[in-house]
Image (cartoon, rainbow, N blue to C red; front, side):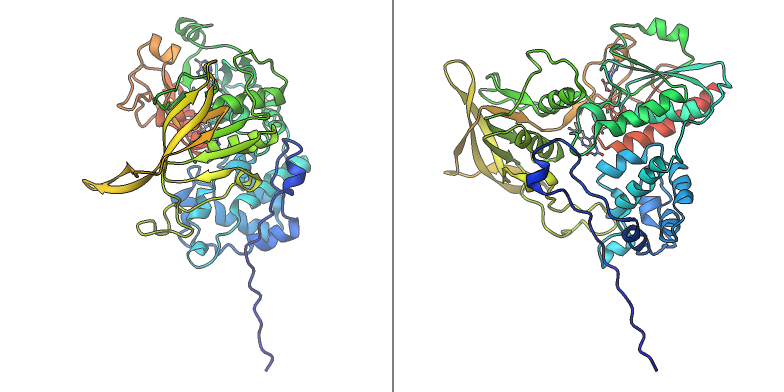
Amino acid sequence: MAKETKQIIRRREPGYRSVTERLKDFDEVERCLSDDELVLQASRCMSCGTPFCHAYACPLANVIPETNELVANGRWKEALKLLLSTHPFPEFTARICPALCEGSCVLGINEEAVSIRHIEKAIIEKGFEKGWIKPRPLVKKHREKVAVIGSGPSGLAAAEILNQKGYEVTVYDKALSPGGLLMYGIPNFKLNKQIIWRRINLMKEEGVIFEGGIAVGEDISFNYLKRHFAAILLAGGAEEPRDLIIPGRNLKGIHFALDLLKAQNKRILGEPLTAEEDINATGKNVVVIGGGDTGSDCIGTAIRQGAKAIYQMEIMPRAPEKRGEGNAWPLWPVVDRVSSSHQEGGTRHWSVATKEFSGNQSNEVVKVHCCEVDWVEEDGSLTPQRIDNTDFALAADLVLLSLGFSGPGPNPLADAIGLARDERGNILVDDRHLTSVDGIFCAGDIARGQSLVVRAMADGVQAAADIDKFLR
Ligand SMILES: Cc1cc2nc3c(=O)[nH]c(=O)nc-3n(C[C@H](O)[C@H](O)[C@H](O)COP(=O)(O)OP(=O)(O)OC[C@H]3O[C@@H](n4cnc5c(N)ncnc54)[C@H](O)[C@@H]3O)c2cc1C
């Protein structure tokens, strides 16, 4: 009898452009797998009876096993239809989502997870390439108009859904270009700005009105909005960066991480920079404080700008290579991650506290003073304790504080009308995304705190459904 041989299909990564090539530009670094390879990769999906990727992990509840099955059978157009039934903008998450779905993929228990993000990217890009995605003739069937304040992923998602439902939607943003942190925060080498413009242009063609360069609460008032719109969605993001209040903080050359990223994105967009905004790392010793993704975005940006040396300091210890105790599947795996920017250069330090900045006579930062820390359990929680005789200093001309965001901070509209806030300073909403003032809704980071693009979009989609219910 002939022996049956089974071919095991392993996960394959598309990888990145070579470091030497990609450091010459700010273009996207990640490659794509071929269609044939993607069909094979999709066939790794086990069509689980209880798909954790879909029901547990994905905030948008993408119907992942069914979509993968369609791709595995080469039925791309149907896969696109199914993907778009839950997800307004897969082209964004397909590039920059950490892929919560893959963290809880059942195959991931014994094998590497299914390449859900890469498959999603191929589906949506094929949709655009083949002309399957084009402006739809949408009818404005409702007389009520809706204002969306903030054009980040949450505001865009809400505008898209409300427009589809037949409302006239105007999206206001204080920034000149729409997209929020997609446009001004995330570097072009992870998400090319043309991908955002492609979507914005489509939305405009379908009737969404974009008003850039307008700070709501300052340039236009709540009274104006109330007279013109039946409902208002505040989607202003979490804009207040966490500071590091230590001696020397006021020296010149110490900035928030977003300042560097925003300046570079504005250059790419061809937008003007004020003297204060015009920050770059060229020829500088750069110290990034904070070991997260925004810090890693600063490394990739600073390397491309020609920094002399780059250090990234993280107070937490290095995460393990594999899931540790208390981090079992299907939880998001807390493991050490090496980003494309980390592959490009820079030196990373873990378990390090920053004690002080010192400067020269012109009040410019010249050194960052640090020491190593031990994480010690005290009253059931871990606290960092400085280790004696481990002090060291790093030369620094540019320090980037990348410690996350504490919340929305002051917001001219929310403050003018006295919207209630929660104990963390986020705008307080009920389970219908409704704030303490009738007719004003909130979605995204402004209400949930700093999070992820996929969660902001899911919030926007749900808030749009809540606004529709409220108006009908
Ligand atoms: C540098 C950086 C990199 C990131 N990378 C990733 C990543 O790779 N993957 C990921 O999933 N998440 C990432 N995130 C997180 C993600 O970008 C945010 O969670 C997401 O953008 C939040 O969306 P949002 O719509 O709530 O707010 P935002 O994207 O912050 O958009 C808010 C918008 O509101 C506007 N606005 C605020 N107040 C007013 C006003 N009064 N009038 C008019 N307009 C106003 C702002 O100008 C802004 O455009 C990153 C964040 C940062 C800072």
